[in-house]
Image (cartoon, rainbow, N blue to C red; front, side, top):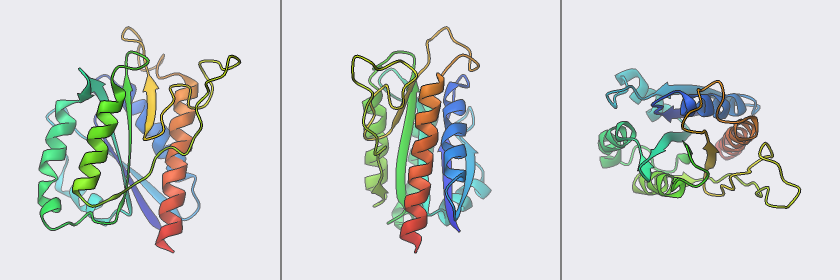
Length: 191
């Protein structure tokens, strides 16, 4: 079985909902086992969580986009990953990422780029969405990949919405298919 770990921070619950959709998609890949790790409000995960990351074949990073980048809690986790980085413990693992923000753009790419750089520092192999965007006149807000992410899965939740209201179903389905793609690739490369 390929082990997929979705490690994320969520400040208000919207990114958690997106993470759960990524997890649900990863769990549908035959031959994959998926696990969710939440970075807490202080930017911490447990020793058991670090062990799960060490054993993972693929790590999918998630964070809300705040002020044009990942949350400080996610950055604290990323900085703490310098211990596995030093020994290149995550080398050749699959890396991928997702983010959510209140606006359609919200500089989400800066957050995804941060995650890509983190993965490259760890000598990981990055996987994007593999999805074409919904960018025709006939497109609707709940179409697959409406926000148009190639490097990572993107979602949008209005600033005054509850996690029950956002992200929208199309963004959650995008996250689910993204999770499945990463997990299926991990299974394939595990051989």
